[in-house]
Length: 422
Image (tube, rainbow, N blue to C red):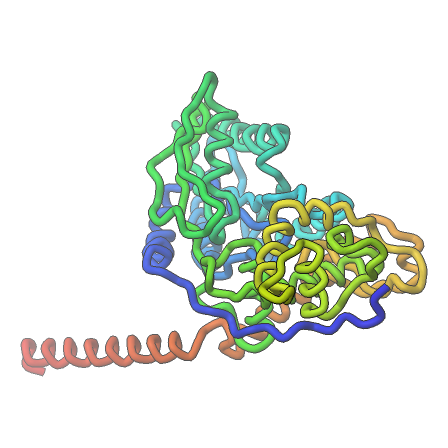
């Protein structure tokens, strides 16, 4: 077992926010006026990091605007509650779909779902994997049920949003195939690399009776991933799930963080151990790890020198294609004094005592997860208050825009004064 797992040194996060993302963000508020259901896709391995904070303002405004036509949806503390449905109500559903459920341990899905629904009562939470037919059928049934509960609507309009490469296009292709009888052609192109979808799709029919239509949207990255260690870690996490354009990170940096996370998830028997020679203990140092892995895979340069760069690329690809399943097979809390730290996915981790580990149950895990979500929200609020969610370049751009707006306003005021003689 590893007694000490040092946090790796990570590079500053890159900026990747191409023009099509800017255009979609500007289009989103208008698009929501024609939307009944928002399917917000996130990655189950990064259930908190894959939240796009830039969507929140538009989505909350959407619910409040629709609430004008459905009296009584706000509680006394202005918390947003589910909107009433039916012939006299409006439809305003937000379903958060965590894709790739097969890449996180099954024991944590139900406690995390309960923790999320307790924290965000206006959202429905659903875990799915696109290679599981029953998950697709359940999600399809959920949409059809919403449509049937609102027969006054001629059609139900669904908008799919999310970070890059969380599986939006793949989901819609699968839902269309599931909901339309007979063979259906693939409607949307898909890719393992982010950024393929660059514009809003044409309307896709997902169901004939009742009528359900959907739009696919471009994946939208955060304009700025943050400052310091938090921003650096956020960027590396998204790069590991291929949510950031390939080439913006060097493989060794990604491998270093991946090794750290796998060690944290299971310091006794990390998921990578079968890749190394028999009887090799867990390794904390990434350079030592890549050296051993390169030799094991016979990735050698001239003179028999291990090729660490090639080994890092292989290690990352292994985790994306196979290793995630191995990590998901990890057992729940370990019994014994070594169980001081446990995690679920790459975002949710907590401290446990030996006593807590021995009496592992769903209620304990849920409570720990609720604490993780609360810490995440508090850190996000603190970061926003300190301006950590906006880069210096963006701050200068906003200040310039404000100065220009004031200048234009003054100029218009002068012209108005001249015209009126005041």
